[in-house]
Amino acid sequence: DQQVKQNSPSLSVQEGRISILNCDYTNSMFDYFLWYKKYPAEGPTFLISISSIKDKNEDGRFTVFLNKSAKHLSLHIVPSQPGDSAVYFCAASALGGGSNYKLTFGKGTLLTVNP
Amino acid sequence: EPEVTQTPSHQVTQMGQEVILRCVPISNHLYFYWYRQILGQKVEFLVSFYNNEISEKSEIFDDQFSVERPDGSNFTLKIRSTKLEDSAMYFCASRAWDSPSSKQYFGPGTRLTVT
Image (tube, chains in turn cyan, red):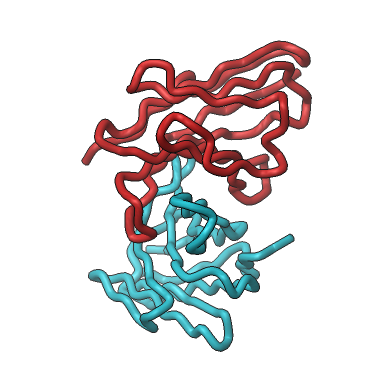
């Protein structure tokens, strides 16, 4: 039951270039989307989020785009830096179910930024 | 920045034994979660906890699992009789307030190995 899908297990980019990580979802009840970054031996770290009422959110080098009709979101990192090398998880939550907002994660994409 | 802490970082146990995984959420947070990640798979929601009771649990969270907030600072996950398939990274997370924009902060995880 893959409600959140990250179809690219890995991505390799050159330093300074743009990294684009993609995520698709199937559950129409999802209305809040997040990207987490994870380094080995650490827990996921929040990166950026977007509400379903927006189509873009920007924070420094990181921008998340949401296409609700396509049930697709993407994370753009520009310019990419070697320190960005990590596993990136797309996650989603839905209103309802009480004050819960549990996260449903994708499988993650390993980003490698080469110097 | 405040952190969620988890102990131990690695726990090895024999099948059938009880284990308790401990977490100290961020001090002013009200919502608490356990997730797990089996090697090579996605991060999966186990349980959410608010106001001293479970607010939601997944189908993974069967009668062998329990959670407790015994003293107002710790948040524990107990597995009564471990199985081989319980081997995974277990992440604790906490959140401050009742909104999807309230970030979930994750701890570094406990690696549970059941032999």
